[in-house]
Amino acid sequence: MSLTFLGVGFCAFAAILAARRLASAAVRPWAELATLPLVALAGFSLLRSPETLGPSDWLQSPFWRGIVLFHCMIAGMVGRSLSHAIEDRRDRVVKWHLAGSPGQPPRIEFDRWEFAYPLLFSAITFGTLLGQLKTQEITMESVLLSFQTGFFWQTLLAARGAAPAAEPARQAARTR
Image (cartoon, rainbow, N blue to C red; front, side, top):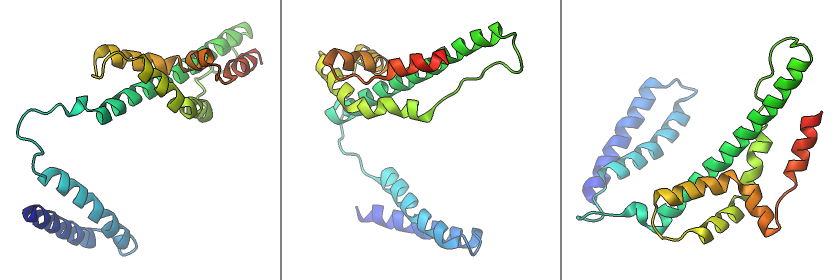
């Protein structure tokens, strides 16, 4: 372990010297401050000794399994937000054609709050997902189910009686 500290210390010292030489006087303190933790993190992760000598199923551990499935579910929520934006644009294109196609065609409008809205319910939805999984391993079925759960998050919450009223607001926005 002392070799790791020496290696990281040497790399941090060299990075701080480089930051002093390359950075301007106004940026130098911030460059030094940002350099030290980045070099330390990189050094400890690269110079760290292996935890085990045999094969490791670290991805199948409960921690990483939860991380992978949660990110797949969030990707499904992002996909649903994008599909709503595309559907809204499709409705506006039809109206644009009916109006005689004046000006530029409508673009996809992406509202960051509509994008963030499903993330508020991600913990509830993730609990539903974990209850549906049959195995404790990451399989293609569990990844796809995770994405599907994120994509249809409103349907799952409606079945539990906790769904937000986002669809009526979307329908009202489309008719404007």
